[in-house]
Length: 484
Image 1 (cartoon, rainbow, N blue to C red):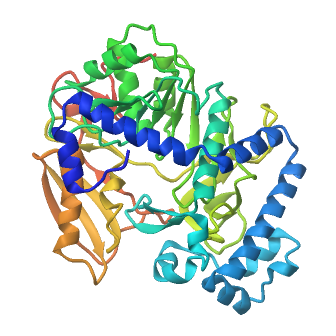
Image 2 (cartoon, one colour; image 1 turned 90 degrees about the vertical axis):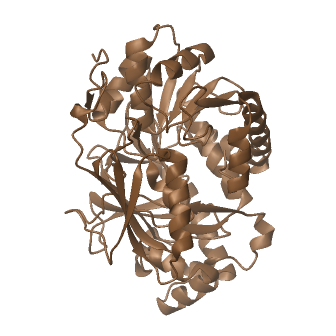
Image 3 (cartoon, rainbow, N blue to C red; image 1 turned 135 degrees about the horizontal axis):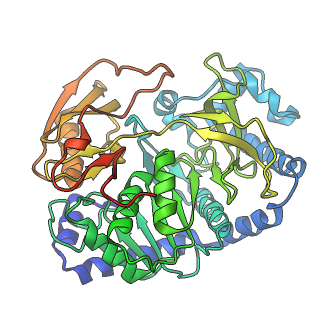
């Protein structure tokens, strides 16, 4: 679900549950029309044909797509015409992937500064939609995404779901807990969910996962009986702990799919134990640069059909562990070549998987580890980078918490940053954290970095074992639940 304007949100929250269901279903119906078009089906059919192909065949397919993508960028995008000329690179003479190394690494700040010159001169022909992303440190980007790329990404998702024998397009019941604004954040009574009847989806709020509310979540989940549960691992882990404590054990979930955060090992064990199925990790980003999908063997496959991926050290040389730098050849409306995703990955020593699928095999995606923010009413809320999705005048952001009654929002502002930007962030925070928590802003010139060069998005010094009620979280999971 999209968040909409302030008046749309207010109207939605004031609607009765059936009214919210109607709005969610209408939105779902419109999105189905956009997702499942010709580009979706042609891509999905191609992925099925290539599923058991050798890496040699996959690399040949990748090279052909990459070559076409580079030629389009040279023809349609001012920024790349200049960069290619400056570095002596010509798509017409592109014969090997190593030739891309003459081009500079593209970071988010360069993208922001060169936004106009990075947009294709044929933008309207791509029927674009404008999307935005914040990344794990609140660095907002807004850019056009072609209709082809949008549908292509859903084809990759549908193909990944098929690895667990789940069909994305068919109306099999699926439940998601991934930041959807399905109910007023100040609400203290269920429902903390809504239904998208068009897709047969149950959409849970990830902002009301308190000890008091979780029995209601479990009851609704069992009533709906989904074949798949998807969303943020931090939210699903809380739901899993509640399921072990209050569930009947009669759910028949085929798979759980996690995205947008690093899935921690204790979360995987808890989720698989609670729901009796495998957890599949999906790594992607709004920029559509790089895609890593976990198979039923637990192995992370970098999809060669999706992007050209490089793992580079601090000096820009290939490494086993380092920055994930990608050329995602799906979005010609706004091409990103050698784009630093901001995430750190580690390649696997063994590059052969027992599932029979190819790709670049990764040991882990190290980036995107986040903590919870604790609210005064004992809710644990994760994945709060949404606070900065529209904050284009914020260079970086960080959340600090030493007490449940207060959250410090640390901002590295741009010169254009005004009180209106602060007000917008406050509004987004209230949407997710409710009205009681005190919000305090700190404005700094830079954020402190960890030893691997990343800035932690959430820094919390709260001892969660001292929270009230029965709750005794261990790493954000209820130790009171029957963990096995």
